[in-house]
Image (cartoon, rainbow, N blue to C red):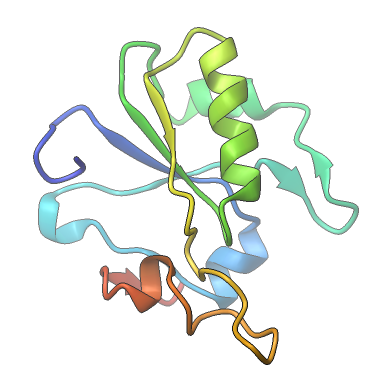
Length: 124
């Protein structure tokens, strides 16, 4: 969708610390950049009270297809629902997230997700 649809946008709703230390999707090969807008704020994990305003300020439009991404698909699902309820979209959740599910040792980054699926990413 990102490569084939010019107006489709990827929105990474993780925290700035996650973007910096874990990495971000690299969309340069298709001439795009992800929108980086945190859904929940560190350290208390409260929903970002300015999320809608922040989305508008980074250029999200109501008529765009928005793909939401977080670590594991939980925050991005909530963000996609909120944006749909606000009249944006269509909005979609990337359910496997950036780091995927936990493995048998409870570690992420080995079972599914953007990184494990071999999609391009860079260290933030």
